Image 1 (cartoon, one colour):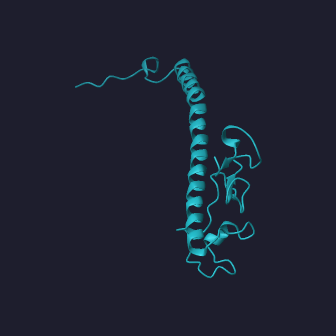
Image 2 (cartoon, one colour):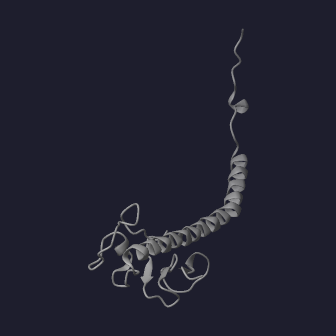
Image 3 (cartoon, helix red, strand yellow):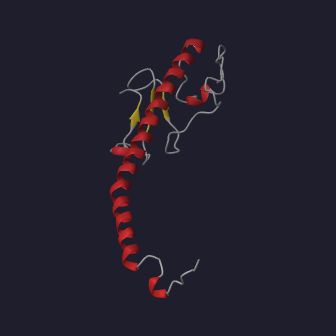
Length: 144
């Protein structure tokens, strides 16, 4: 059996043109798919905040059943983790992780009781942490 020597002219590899074509195709794919992935990521955070607000609202209802009232604005959501002064029938902590969750963007949920839209209001101001906005910056509220 004889081994053939490969000359430099017959060596295997990629040409610069082939590499550029592959890079252009990858760039086009990233340009088309990237924004779609980011859109879904933003809507997932909004949906997560909405679910957390619903969970907090249900936990506040349990708190009210046991204590006889909702926590005041001053007591805040922290009353679900630590007994506020004067809450004699407090039977908490009411949250499994024994800490009040933050919204998906890392900000604290806003709580007001009595609320402007019901017995209490819980809301997140979205990614920009300021009132109003659209998309990922929209406010997520307990009263809608």
